[in-house]
Structures are given as structure tokens and as C-alpha cells.
Length: 119
Image (cartoon, rainbow, N blue to C red; front, side, top):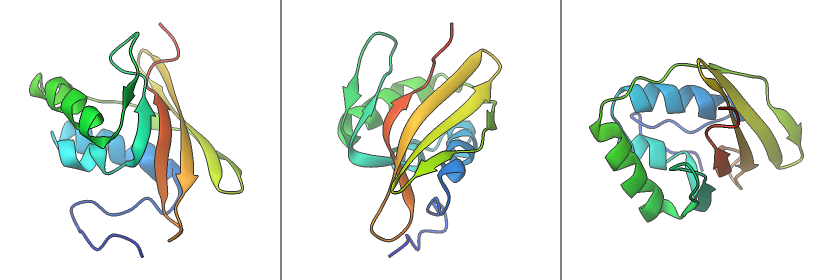
């Protein structure tokens, strides 16, 4: 069943994830960012490191958002194949690429996130 949390609406389309990331990151919403990932997701950040699982992803975003960065980008159309989708966002410095997974309730969460494929 989709989340009823108005602060963190669920992604009903894979492209929602990139838009939500930008909105929540700019709002300094760590929990909102963690809510975009499956509990055992893998995030390739910080550079050269893999961060696995919600608790580790939370710690990375707590540190990152403490610096009050500004996120900009344009989510691109997803490539969907069944319950998997390749999502991406064009950013001022390159692009992101992620693998999203459709949840049993029809919403989408990221399973794998590479936030910088260029640069």
C-alpha cells in the first residue's frame, strides 16, 4: 500500500525518484532521501566507495546535507522493463544513473544508485 506520509509521497513512476531527490535534498530532508531507496540498496557514494543499506545511506546523506548543498538536474524518461527501470538525471556536472525496482504496491524505489557517471 502506498505511503500515506504527505511529507514523503511515494514514487508512482520511476521518474518521480529523481524529482523527489532534488526536492528533498534541497530541503535538507535526510529521511526523505533515505525513503527513496530499498532497505538494502547500494549507493556509489562517496566517490570510490559503495554504501549499502538504509542506515549507511542515512549516515552518508546526514554528512552530505550538513554542508547545505544545492541540487539541480533534469530527470530523464526512464527505461522500464517489467519491475525494473533505468533512471537518470542530467546534472550541471554530468549525469546520474540508477536502477529502480517496482514494489509490490506498485510504487518505485531505487535499488542501485550511481550519482556521478561523468567527471
